[in-house]
Length: 73
Image (tube, rainbow, N blue to C red; front, top):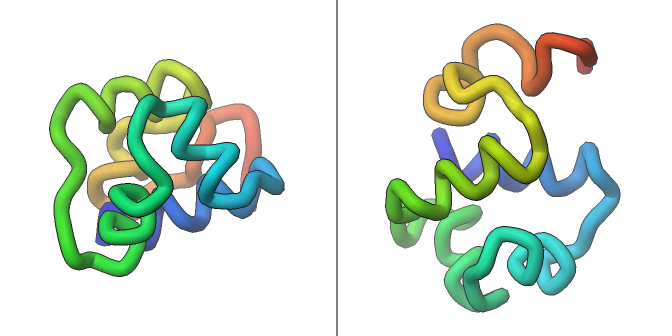
């Protein structure tokens, strides 16, 4: 679920995997694995995404509510 939400957030911001991975401090390959559900992001990566993109932590982790309290998608 979290990988799908990260992919959705990346696409909402019109970023490719290389751009997004640079912004959150992981390799593009690691991001690809996270989005595909092959691995789970470390907590520091989750926090980096939460802070950098000002998204809802609840949405990022569970998919409930919306990506941001200011946006509805």
